[in-house]
Amino acid sequence: TGFTGGMVTGTGNSLIQGQNIGKALSNGLNSGLWGGAIGGLTSGITGGIRAARNGNNFWSGNGAGGKYGNVPQVDVGDLINMSGNTELSPYCGYGLCSSELVEPDRFILNVERFVETENSTISRFCFPDCTDGYFLEPNGPSSIIEGSNLRIMSGAYEVVPYSSANYPNVLQLVDVPGRTKILTHIGNFPIDTKGCLLPGLSYSTDFVGKSRDALEKLLNLHSSKTRFIINIY
Image (cartoon, rainbow, N blue to C red; front, top):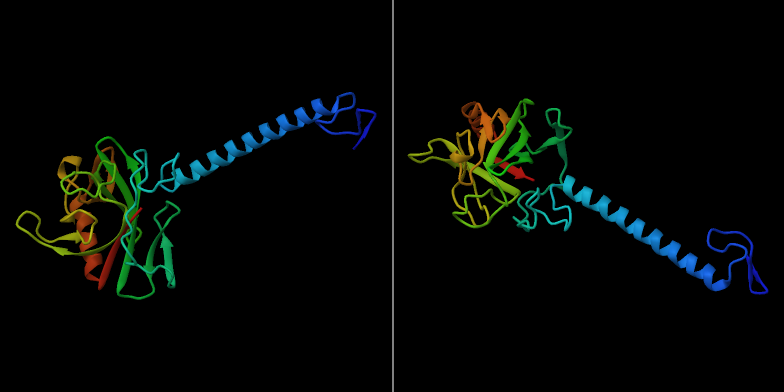
Protein backbone atom coordinates (compact mmCIF):
# COMPACT_ATOMS: atom_id res chain seq x y z
CA THR A 1 0.00 0.00 0.00
CA GLY A 2 1.30 3.48 -0.86
CA PHE A 3 0.24 7.10 -0.91
CA THR A 4 0.38 9.12 -4.20
CA GLY A 5 -0.57 12.76 -4.56
CA GLY A 6 -2.85 12.76 -1.56
CA MET A 7 -4.80 9.82 -2.95
CA VAL A 8 -4.80 6.31 -1.50
CA THR A 9 -3.64 3.53 -3.76
CA GLY A 10 -3.44 -0.21 -3.15
CA THR A 11 -5.96 -2.51 -1.47
CA GLY A 12 -7.49 -2.97 2.01
CA ASN A 13 -10.80 -2.78 3.83
CA SER A 14 -10.25 0.74 5.15
CA LEU A 15 -7.75 2.25 2.71
CA ILE A 16 -9.88 2.33 -0.44
CA GLN A 17 -8.81 4.15 -3.59
CA GLY A 18 -10.38 7.54 -3.81
CA GLN A 19 -10.49 8.24 -0.06
CA ASN A 20 -8.35 10.91 1.52
CA ILE A 21 -5.96 9.97 4.31
CA GLY A 22 -8.16 11.33 7.10
CA LYS A 23 -11.19 9.42 5.90
CA ALA A 24 -9.15 6.25 5.51
CA LEU A 25 -7.67 6.56 9.00
CA SER A 26 -11.12 7.27 10.46
CA ASN A 27 -12.58 4.18 8.83
CA GLY A 28 -9.65 2.10 10.02
CA LEU A 29 -10.04 3.38 13.59
CA ASN A 30 -13.79 2.63 13.59
CA SER A 31 -13.16 -0.88 12.29
CA GLY A 32 -10.56 -1.47 14.98
CA LEU A 33 -12.82 -0.20 17.75
CA TRP A 34 -15.74 -2.34 16.59
CA GLY A 35 -13.47 -5.37 16.28
CA GLY A 36 -12.07 -4.84 19.77
CA ALA A 37 -15.51 -4.31 21.29
CA ILE A 38 -16.90 -7.46 19.68
CA GLY A 39 -13.82 -9.42 20.71
CA GLY A 40 -14.08 -8.18 24.30
CA LEU A 41 -17.79 -8.96 24.48
CA THR A 42 -17.24 -12.46 23.11
CA SER A 43 -14.41 -13.05 25.59
CA GLY A 44 -16.54 -11.76 28.48
CA ILE A 45 -19.50 -13.97 27.62
CA THR A 46 -17.22 -16.99 27.27
CA GLY A 47 -15.67 -16.28 30.67
CA GLY A 48 -19.10 -15.82 32.25
CA ILE A 49 -20.35 -19.12 30.88
CA ARG A 50 -17.22 -20.85 32.14
CA ALA A 51 -17.73 -19.35 35.63
CA ALA A 52 -21.39 -20.35 35.71
CA ARG A 53 -20.58 -23.91 34.71
CA ASN A 54 -18.15 -24.04 37.62
CA GLY A 55 -20.91 -22.93 40.01
CA ASN A 56 -19.71 -19.34 40.26
CA ASN A 57 -21.42 -16.02 39.57
CA PHE A 58 -21.76 -15.24 35.82
CA TRP A 59 -20.92 -11.52 36.12
CA SER A 60 -18.25 -11.44 38.82
CA GLY A 61 -16.84 -14.98 38.75
CA ASN A 62 -17.16 -15.14 42.56
CA GLY A 63 -17.31 -18.57 44.23
CA ALA A 64 -20.35 -19.60 46.34
CA GLY A 65 -22.15 -20.25 43.15
CA GLY A 66 -25.52 -20.62 41.60
CA LYS A 67 -28.03 -17.91 40.96
CA TYR A 68 -27.35 -16.30 44.35
CA GLY A 69 -23.62 -15.66 43.84
CA ASN A 70 -21.56 -12.91 45.47
CA VAL A 71 -20.80 -14.97 48.58
CA PRO A 72 -17.04 -15.52 48.97
CA GLN A 73 -15.86 -19.07 49.43
CA VAL A 74 -14.11 -19.88 52.68
CA ASP A 75 -10.66 -21.41 52.58
CA VAL A 76 -10.98 -24.48 54.81
CA GLY A 77 -7.22 -25.01 54.79
CA ASP A 78 -5.09 -27.84 53.51
CA LEU A 79 -7.48 -30.52 54.68
CA ILE A 80 -6.97 -32.60 51.57
CA ASN A 81 -3.77 -32.87 49.58
CA MET A 82 -5.17 -33.64 46.16
CA SER A 83 -1.73 -33.50 44.54
CA GLY A 84 -1.15 -37.13 45.54
CA ASN A 85 -1.86 -40.04 43.29
CA THR A 86 -5.58 -40.78 43.04
CA GLU A 87 -7.86 -43.35 41.49
CA LEU A 88 -11.00 -42.06 39.82
CA SER A 89 -14.19 -44.04 39.38
CA PRO A 90 -17.19 -43.09 37.19
CA TYR A 91 -19.68 -40.73 38.80
CA CYS A 92 -22.82 -42.70 38.03
CA GLY A 93 -23.53 -41.41 34.55
CA TYR A 94 -22.94 -37.70 35.17
CA GLY A 95 -19.52 -37.63 33.54
CA LEU A 96 -17.92 -36.66 36.85
CA CYS A 97 -15.79 -38.62 39.27
CA SER A 98 -15.81 -39.67 42.89
CA SER A 99 -12.20 -39.69 44.08
CA GLU A 100 -10.74 -42.25 46.40
CA LEU A 101 -7.13 -41.72 47.40
CA VAL A 102 -4.79 -44.65 46.91
CA GLU A 103 -4.29 -44.61 50.68
CA PRO A 104 -6.88 -47.21 51.76
CA ASP A 105 -7.86 -45.42 54.96
CA ARG A 106 -9.20 -42.19 53.44
CA PHE A 107 -12.20 -41.60 51.18
CA ILE A 108 -13.31 -38.35 49.54
CA LEU A 109 -16.95 -38.08 48.51
CA ASN A 110 -17.26 -35.40 45.83
CA VAL A 111 -20.64 -33.68 46.08
CA GLU A 112 -21.90 -31.40 43.31
CA ARG A 113 -24.68 -28.89 43.95
CA PHE A 114 -26.78 -28.88 40.80
CA VAL A 115 -30.36 -27.84 41.66
CA GLU A 116 -31.41 -24.64 43.44
CA THR A 117 -34.94 -23.51 44.28
CA GLU A 118 -36.32 -20.83 46.57
CA ASN A 119 -36.58 -23.46 49.31
CA SER A 120 -33.68 -25.88 48.89
CA THR A 121 -30.41 -26.90 47.30
CA ILE A 122 -29.90 -30.42 45.96
CA SER A 123 -26.52 -31.97 45.28
CA ARG A 124 -25.51 -35.31 43.80
CA PHE A 125 -22.74 -37.80 44.42
CA CYS A 126 -21.90 -41.44 43.83
CA PHE A 127 -21.37 -44.27 46.29
CA PRO A 128 -18.43 -46.62 45.60
CA ASP A 129 -20.90 -49.22 44.29
CA CYS A 130 -22.02 -46.59 41.74
CA THR A 131 -25.40 -46.02 43.39
CA ASP A 132 -26.67 -42.47 42.88
CA GLY A 133 -26.84 -40.40 46.05
CA TYR A 134 -28.26 -36.97 46.78
CA PHE A 135 -28.21 -34.38 49.55
CA LEU A 136 -30.96 -31.86 50.24
CA GLU A 137 -29.81 -28.67 51.99
CA PRO A 138 -31.49 -25.34 52.72
CA ASN A 139 -31.63 -22.69 50.03
CA GLY A 140 -28.83 -20.19 49.38
CA PRO A 141 -26.94 -18.00 49.57
CA SER A 142 -24.28 -20.05 51.36
CA SER A 143 -23.78 -18.67 54.86
CA ILE A 144 -21.23 -18.66 57.69
CA ILE A 145 -23.76 -17.19 60.13
CA GLU A 146 -24.95 -19.45 62.95
CA GLY A 147 -28.73 -19.70 63.02
CA SER A 148 -29.16 -18.39 59.47
CA ASN A 149 -30.87 -21.66 58.44
CA LEU A 150 -29.14 -21.39 55.05
CA ARG A 151 -26.84 -23.89 53.38
CA ILE A 152 -23.19 -24.05 54.46
CA MET A 153 -20.26 -22.84 52.38
CA SER A 154 -18.85 -25.14 49.74
CA GLY A 155 -15.61 -26.83 50.76
CA ALA A 156 -14.04 -30.02 52.11
CA TYR A 157 -15.17 -31.25 55.52
CA GLU A 158 -14.03 -34.13 57.69
CA VAL A 159 -16.94 -36.35 58.77
CA VAL A 160 -17.18 -37.97 62.21
CA PRO A 161 -19.87 -40.02 64.04
CA TYR A 162 -22.46 -38.11 66.08
CA SER A 163 -25.28 -39.17 68.40
CA SER A 164 -27.80 -37.33 70.52
CA ALA A 165 -31.32 -37.93 71.81
CA ASN A 166 -32.78 -36.27 68.72
CA TYR A 167 -30.24 -37.56 66.20
CA PRO A 168 -28.88 -40.98 67.20
CA ASN A 169 -26.21 -42.62 65.04
CA VAL A 170 -25.70 -39.96 62.38
CA LEU A 171 -22.70 -38.14 60.89
CA GLN A 172 -21.35 -34.65 61.60
CA LEU A 173 -19.27 -32.31 59.42
CA VAL A 174 -16.55 -30.72 61.52
CA ASP A 175 -14.89 -27.30 61.33
CA VAL A 176 -17.68 -25.76 59.25
CA PRO A 177 -16.94 -22.00 59.06
CA GLY A 178 -19.24 -20.13 61.43
CA ARG A 179 -21.59 -23.08 61.96
CA THR A 180 -21.97 -25.88 64.52
CA LYS A 181 -23.74 -29.25 64.54
CA ILE A 182 -24.02 -29.57 60.78
CA LEU A 183 -25.20 -33.15 60.51
CA THR A 184 -26.08 -35.72 57.89
CA HIS A 185 -29.35 -37.14 59.18
CA ILE A 186 -32.64 -38.58 57.93
CA GLY A 187 -35.07 -36.12 56.33
CA ASN A 188 -36.96 -35.51 53.12
CA PHE A 189 -38.07 -31.88 52.87
CA PRO A 190 -36.59 -28.38 53.40
CA ILE A 191 -38.51 -28.11 56.66
CA ASP A 192 -36.37 -31.00 57.99
CA THR A 193 -33.09 -29.07 57.81
CA LYS A 194 -31.66 -25.82 59.16
CA GLY A 195 -28.29 -26.33 57.52
CA CYS A 196 -27.79 -30.09 57.68
CA LEU A 197 -27.36 -32.42 54.72
CA LEU A 198 -30.34 -34.77 54.24
CA PRO A 199 -29.25 -37.85 52.26
CA GLY A 200 -31.39 -39.65 49.70
CA LEU A 201 -31.28 -42.17 46.88
CA SER A 202 -33.74 -40.23 44.70
CA TYR A 203 -34.85 -36.62 44.36
CA SER A 204 -37.49 -34.31 42.97
CA THR A 205 -38.27 -30.64 43.56
CA ASP A 206 -37.55 -29.82 47.23
CA PHE A 207 -37.44 -33.53 48.13
CA VAL A 208 -35.10 -36.50 48.56
CA GLY A 209 -36.36 -40.06 48.92
CA LYS A 210 -35.17 -43.22 50.72
CA SER A 211 -33.28 -41.07 53.21
CA ARG A 212 -32.88 -43.83 55.80
CA ASP A 213 -31.33 -46.17 53.21
CA ALA A 214 -28.96 -43.45 52.02
CA LEU A 215 -27.82 -42.64 55.56
CA GLU A 216 -27.18 -46.33 56.22
CA LYS A 217 -24.95 -46.50 53.14
CA LEU A 218 -23.03 -43.42 54.30
CA LEU A 219 -22.57 -44.86 57.79
CA ASN A 220 -21.25 -48.11 56.31
CA LEU A 221 -18.88 -46.17 54.06
CA HIS A 222 -17.64 -44.10 57.01
CA SER A 223 -17.05 -47.18 59.17
CA SER A 224 -14.90 -48.74 56.46
CA LYS A 225 -12.44 -45.83 56.41
CA THR A 226 -10.28 -44.15 59.01
CA ARG A 227 -11.00 -40.75 57.45
CA PHE A 228 -14.12 -39.82 55.51
CA ILE A 229 -14.31 -36.42 53.79
CA ILE A 230 -17.23 -34.74 52.06
CA ASN A 231 -16.11 -32.26 49.40
CA ILE A 232 -18.97 -29.92 48.40
CA TYR A 233 -18.69 -27.76 45.29
